[in-house]
Length: 148
Image (cartoon, rainbow, N blue to C red; front, side, top):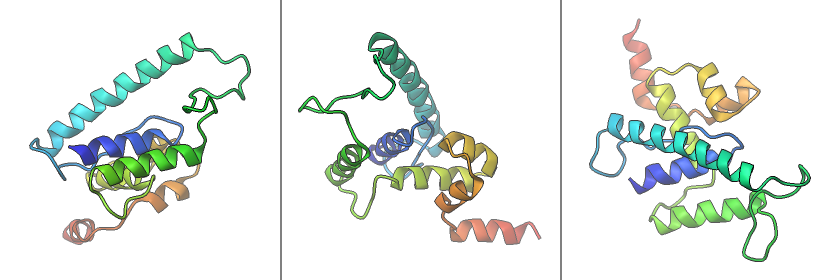
């Protein structure tokens, strides 16, 4: 379950909330149960973020939305370090700040979700960008061959 939560955190970093799910990798629930839980989590995150923005309206659009302990705005680098620390704390080695996004998009693609839907979830404006996030897995190749 820790991996799934980390995936959501990493996916949210991209500027739009979406699903990044390491389905069934850890924890006791089925992949479907975990996906349903994460959909509810993401929807709740959207509501909470909207409430936060409404309560803390920036005076200028360039003003940071979130601040560090030093009262500086979070940067992409700050968030990358936070996510990498979460992965390390969860005992996941070799992961990067985009691992959750890559895993989530690949899992959804493997389940038949179209690239245009994945593109919208990821907040990408270019389909080629989304396609680079989708890892090719042996099970995907096998499923494609079985369609012939």
